[in-house]
Image 1 (cartoon, rainbow, N blue to C red):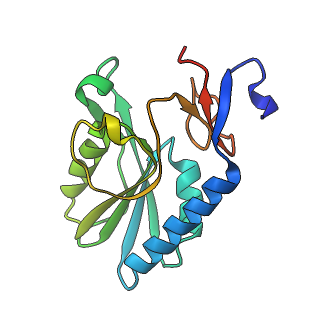
Image 2: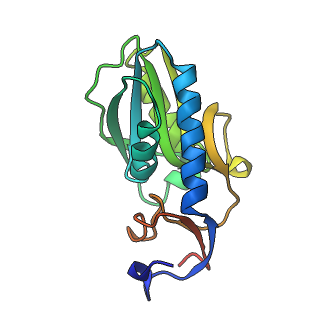
Length: 182
């Protein structure tokens, strides 16, 4: 385990190792390269959680891509129940008539992802696809077409590779399960 977390976070076990993550991200990057060959692709990462996945994924995509970031803020005590969010950092790249790939760290209910996708659709892209490192299909509250998913997860509380607990642990090179949510 990483000494950065000593005394800060109670890790139960490593769920996905650095090697497993790297192999899966490479597979996804190669698939995206095949799927978007000859197309103008803009990759939009959702901050903060997707930064590690976004960074690694784009290095495995062998295409001339443009990369931008979008940020959102939760309205306290409502997002997980109602999907109420607001865009706090919009994209700067014009996506009209372009292929867009939204990159998330984790999709649980799908509400935030659906909101971000609907906001980007207003900008007139040719197509929007979704990619996520982690997907919890059992908690999805709506049908969203996730084209590229790294791993499926359950309701465990996870940390590492962009996922945090009180802003700690994003920098872990693996994904671990926490003993409990505090």
